[in-house]
Image (cartoon, rainbow, N blue to C red; front, top):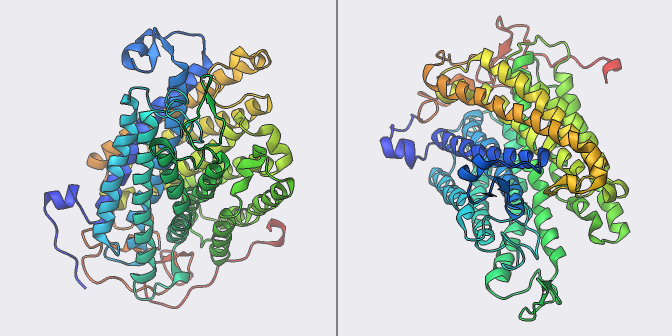
Length: 592
């Protein structure tokens, strides 16, 4: 097999079917959306830290959000809604899954490209109008959607329910429908490529854990997205078709009884459909971050992944359990206590395979020969973030404690640690690790470490502090916490959180500067700068069209063959013929 011919400008840079270029398109689209979401988050934190302050210059910058220097309350809810929606679906999903999945999968399994290159291109150009619709909703007459990123009805189902429930909410639904279509196309492509296009010798039990996590995440998505698709269609019909799937009888809005609706619907039905996708979506994002961390840990520690096969089974168990625990988001919805007890037990159970994964990460570091680069720093920080965030999850998994903490800043802090901090650490680790293969140049290591030390302590401390606010009783979505006397003594925490998260936001300028400067002026990268063992490091940097200039390599061993006794470099590429090297030493009894 020979590499494909190099396409022209438009087919290479715009309407490309090359998985590597599409990965770059997803990545830079996510970066643009991240800038918007970060600005919105800073406006939110500014309001929470100094709720009585006026900002005349912000009225000039954002005339639709501010009046006379004051953030409008209804626009505050729109900012919260759009920040959550864009960060989860249009930043983390695009950068972590769509971008790295597109880039890594063919290279790690030994394929020339994705199974369906045209569908791959179509998936990207489906998400672009979704981004434009989401951003354009701010220009709707009544502003962007304001019903929260979960879009609970009746606020999301009735255009007259509240400011932000009009055209902006409709555009939100349409954007999410396009996102679901894009992600479904990508997931089908990932699964088909992994199952059908693996190189000779690349069995499923020889795949790197990064590819395993993209595969499992795609399977979860394919199984769960139909529920949200159905919910979005029914919600749109409730809004524009006078149906009442989610609207009960007797609704009163602005003192008026809505008698023209048929009634008989249930808002709880939407919650069940949403969280049947919403909670597995957490693992659609977190599992690829873990897979990236495993690859980076093995290369940086110069050790085989401890418990490689048990990690695969733990990932599968997490995937199965993720689909039967959605009800813990609804403990206060009036569900039968026995049903709540089931969801509590099932949710707590998921911590067991997660603990296996975390301990296997720690075990990989046993007797390691650490090469402490920036990618490894972020992988190590991810282990810490999983531990800290997981502790809070136990309280929210148990009905008795969740009833007190539900809808509080405890939930906000936990959610950000797990769905934002862990996943962003995965994005950063993947960026620093695979940047040489993407662009053929090295990122600046000094700037990378500066970025790490400005970011990691700030985000962990800031989101842990949110747990304290939640235990003090502060509810999410509050426009002015000082309006409540019992929250005034802890208002200093809001100021502190805003300052440390502001530092973390400012640190991303270091990352962006390093990224764009190194793309053009970074030190040239060798074929395998990390001396890693997986197949993507057997091709030139950057990888050419068709991935390998000659024959696709044959795979001879498992993915993490480091510290081999018969190899002078202490590692063996999967493409290197030879006997299987000895397995890693087991952990001593005291460390188990």
